[in-house]
Image 1: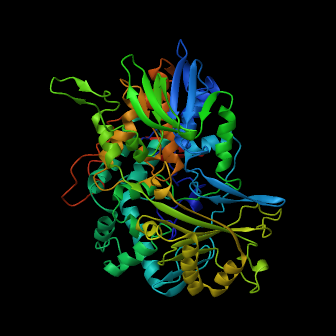
Image 2: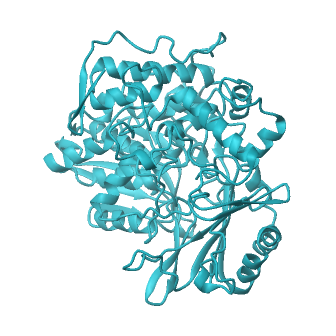
Image 3: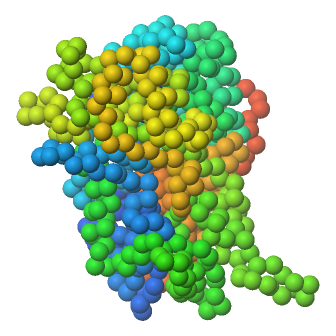
Length: 633
């Protein structure tokens, strides 16, 4: 989702087959290989448990998004566990939400209202895509990957396909500077320095090829320094401060540079609405490689939802239009749920364990943060606590970002030269500082036998994808009002594109996740100081003295990505199964992710920041083998 090209030190596309390039196999905050855990146990016992409980146990899952579906699927493979999946809406999938539009003999056209871009470093996601034989394609039309045009402060700027930056000296400088900032902090993923390691990517590359405890500790030390430095710093403050360091940037950044970066930024839709976010969240994005090689599913992410649905069909009871409004702990180690079902009826069900895989706002609306109170005699009035205090605080505090999309189908893919009167390609991507922010022309048909794109059939255009304040600006506008506003900006950039769009538009659909029932927001992004809340929410699954476990994007280390939600589903499935008496396979997230690996509440570093300070434990000289070459360290 990059506006500038991915910074050269972090960008792996052109180096992924080289001997020196580094691509993470785990997420930095966990350093746990979910794909290996799932593959190993699928091949060994067929499930995440070596043995189920001795008697039949009942587990409820609340929320049928990515985390809930993963948990349901994994639990359904364990003997003596009965699973019921509750979903407040009328469909499975949560923010895996695709609208399919028929197009004759060609593929259905897709409006991806939620998840739409999938980096191959999403290893848990790709485990399930591989399992269900779904193959994404590497043709997501990100800016600069395809022909792109920009409109900034009423000036049109060209960006030819394949160029690293737009044809503008200021944007070229800003793009290069930001690349240097990330390399200064994280190191170079394309060429990690394994001989004299000093940065995160250096140590991580060593650990990944030689995974011993000493090498792991070096990675932990490197990321811990970054957490300490930026845990309480906004994205704006961090970039502006780095932008004054002439050892990193070509010239000190001005407020106008920050405005350019905020308006169009490294993230399509602009980073301005993210300026108040914790800088560690942004660094996490690049450290984990989620900006690289983004792919899409021609069949839509709904095809993964359908695959999960088919896999659990005979094993899991699915209850749609069933909104859980309250969860209570009973005296005999069971839990009860109050449920509003279709037609307004209410019912109460009891379970041995419950997984709650919803947004944190939905969790709060279920009353998970509220306990019964003691009267003057010290007697508890109301239900006992479901969760410990720290996860409850996290549910209250963690920030959910709002987001909006506007999709249309067109009668043709008019942006291709063959389909318009100009005889040349129109822009496949438009970025602007106007209300629409980012536009993407999408092709959901397979390439022809000669490798050329299939230009026949309907087109799909994501006219606007915005978040934060840019989403809030649109909430009061109707769908038609939005279209007219967007058309003004498109016309200013490329009048022919605007004319053809207006002539050919057919079906339209918008979504504002903030206003969507049962979601109340799009994805989690931490504010400064919320890393500790994130830690408490994520590791809640390791609290084995209770039988309620949290999951979902909102409690993950990867807000806005399926690779955030899905591992939490695995975690919660392991925890709930263990709680009811199953024997979980060895080397699971219950035992092999240390909750105390990082300290997220350390005070910020106040002295001059040295990214090599105390990172490297005493290492013995050793060598690692990679692709039949021995590398000395």
